[in-house]
Image 1 (cartoon, rainbow, N blue to C red):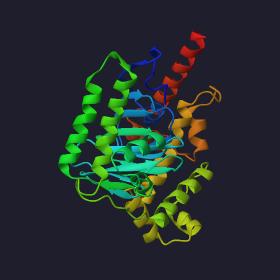
Image 2 (cartoon, helix red, strand yellow):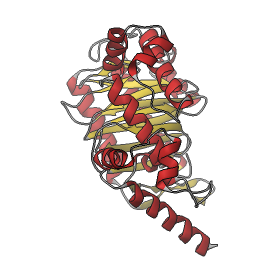
Image 3 (cartoon, rainbow, N blue to C red):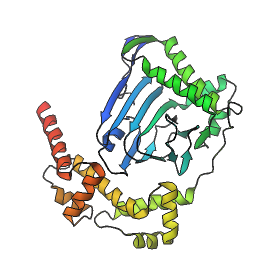
Image 4 (tube, rainbow, N blue to C red):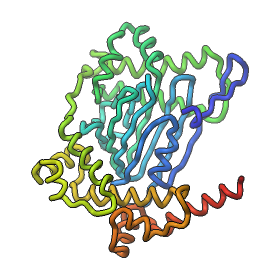
Length: 340
C-alpha cells in the first residue's frame, strides 16, 4: 500500500504528508489503484466508468476517499494484521457488505485475511481507513476499550448516530484538506493517527449512539452466490443458464433468485451475463499474454458466439466498444515497450 501514497523520509524523524488523487476510467484500474489489497471489481450497471481515489499513508494507517460512478460488486481482502473501515459519505445511497446493508448512519468494518464482498451503488462515495491491528489495539486500550477490537472482528456493520458520523466525516475530509506536501515529525504523525482512530473507536462505543452489535452473517446465501460465480468462471467457454445453475447448486429457481437479490441486489440471469462481460473486458485489457488475440477470440473464450449481440451488450455495460478497449490496451503496451 505504500506505493499508493509514498512516504518519503525527510529526516530520520520526519515523513512527507502527501495527498494523492488518481482517476480511473475502468473498474479494474480503480481496484489496482488501491495497492496492498487483494480485490476484484465487477461493474454491474451500464455506462462509462469513472472512479476517483484520494489517499494518504501515515506510517501504519492508510486513509482514502473513493468515489465510483457505476454499481460495483467488489471482492476484497486487506493485508494480514489490518482492519478496514468503510464510512459512506452521503445520505441516501446504501451499500452492502457480505449481504448486509450499510445504512446511512453506520459504517462497515472487516479484519485482514478475511475476504469480504461489497456491493456499492452507482454514484457511491466512501471514506476508507486501513490500519494495522497493533496500532488499533493500542488506541483501543488507550480509551479503555480493550475488548472492542475483538468485537469489531465479528461485526460487519456498526451503527452510529448522525452526529458522530458527521463529525467523523468532517475529520476525514480535513485530513485531505492539507493537500500538497508537508513535513510531519513523529509526534505530528502520532497525533494525526490518534485523532482519526480515536474518532472511529469512540463511535463504536455503546452510548455514543446505537450500541455496536454483531450482525449475524448470511453464510448460506453468500455461499450460494459464491458457488454460482465459481461455476460460471469454471465454465467460462459457454453460457451457463439459470436452470443449469439451479441443478448444479441443488436449489430451486426461487431460492437462487432470492439469494442473488438479497446478496447482490440483481437477478441471477443478469449477473451471469455481466460476470462474463467483465471477464472479456479484463482479458481485453490484459495484453501481456499475447497481443495477437482478437476481440472475437476473447469473446469466444467466454462463450459469446453472437458477436453483434455481444458487442451491443458490451457497449451498453461499459460505454465503449470492445474493439476500443483492445485498441487502448495495445496502445498502453506499445508505450511501455517504447519506454524500455
